[in-house]
Amino acid sequence: MEVSRATALANPAPQVRRDTALLLGSCLLIDLTDALLRDAAGLASASVRTLDALHLASALRIEADEFVAYGPLRPVPGEGVDPSPMLVERGSASPLTSDPNPQRAIPMRTDCAVVGAGVAGLVAARELRRAGYSTTVVEARNRIGGRVWTHEALGAGADRGATFIHWTQPHVWAEFTRYGFGLDQRPPAERSVWSIGGERHEGGAAAYSDLIADALDALARESIPAFPRPHDFSDEPAFEAADALSLADRIADLEISAAVKDALHGFWSVHCNGWCEAGAYSHALHWLALCGGSWRLFGEAASRYKVEGGLGQLPERLMADAQADVRLEFDVASIEQDEDQVLVRSSDGEELRAGAAIVAVPLNALPRIDFTPDFEAPTRGLIDEGAPAGGFKLFLKLRERIDSYVCMGSAEQPIMFARLEADLADGSVISCYGADRAVLADGPDAVISVVEEWLPGVHVKDSWWHDWCGDELSGEAWRIPRPGQTQRSARAAEQPNGRVVLAGADVARGWTGYLDGAVESGHRAARYATQIIAGRSRSNTAPAPAATKDMPLIGPR
Image (cartoon, rainbow, N blue to C red):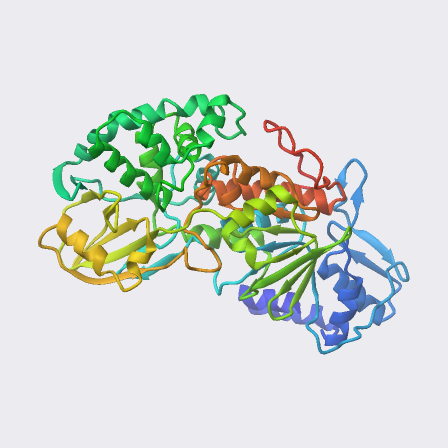
């Protein structure tokens, strides 16, 4: 059947099709009945992949004397997994099992279940395939990508979630290079407009940044002492002191004018996707340290360069390379595990059994899933606390074609940032960011009034937004830790819970909340999962590995 399907997809010459027909005519073909699928499900174990179990069940049904299986069926002590063909003699498999309830959904089986088809989950699936393991990716949405979503709206294609990449972000830049994407950028700003104390100001492109430069320089100088190696955990006293503060706490301590403090609140609230009263000061220092202590470079990394044609190409390419089974609209309700396997169950009763599970969903969405056994206290506490999530990203279509402005607001305004995204023949599209999504509860009028104040003479034709914070499958647009949470998120991912590993941008060591963090976390989760599948898992009470050493990859490359 697979040979026939592959031949049809390839659309070969007539002679190839005839040869394929002759080949199939010499084979004994077996129908994939429900009974055969149940038999295969009963044979699948932590060391047998689903397809091999199906082949074995077929061989047993026709009373074959032997069966050749290919794939990572057995760990070899000290050497990882043996990828060579394995001869299984009749009778060596476990007995066929009958399903006592033939009406229930037939359980699926895979080496590793990946919960969440965002970038972190897809990177993990790709790396597991490269290591020789089968994966099944389950996703509650009807699409892949998670918070990466390139969508046509208001007459222009735009990234509605994650958007920006930069060469200071090593993991995502490696993917950019691997897949040969083109680099695009926002139109360079020609003018800046800002509001302080209810008063509008306008100047050249750098006028606003010049206003807050000295204050940001003072904060940036504190970043490297707190994070001398920003991709590792920090135990520096400077980090400990900063982690106890919110951004608002630190701004209040600066000896600067009230006007500049107001502007700083607006600047950091944009990056926090919420009020900077809730965001950890240590997290802001972490971002700055990742950019060599330069707030100007951080601003560029966070909001200038994009993938030509949209970031949505990345999950598509990852999915193609992963070659994983994908189940969309599989909304996970519970994950149970014992010492041998993991059982992932959907809200409508579908089941997936695996040797390990990578859970790559935002931390604010984890309370939707029931884990048995539960996470240990530090990780469970982090999940229960949640992270601040209140901001929004709104797109407006203007009737007029406008110059490239960058607009910044103060903390008391409905939006703190607006920027030209697309210059179209019939107008312009701008993106607007605010700290409190409640201002959109009755529509975008409050935001539109601010835009019309900043840019006199413009008229808004239409608007579009996705409420990421109100979306139960995300619970946030991007994660900003509370004070005291900055390193706890990453440490949660460093310690698998038995056969369950956390992944995602929320639990990255480096660019937490950014796409680079998602890619980084996907690689790390895949390494941990290979350890678990191959029987070298670390206990969930064992100490985390040293920050400067990665765990070795188990399995063939």
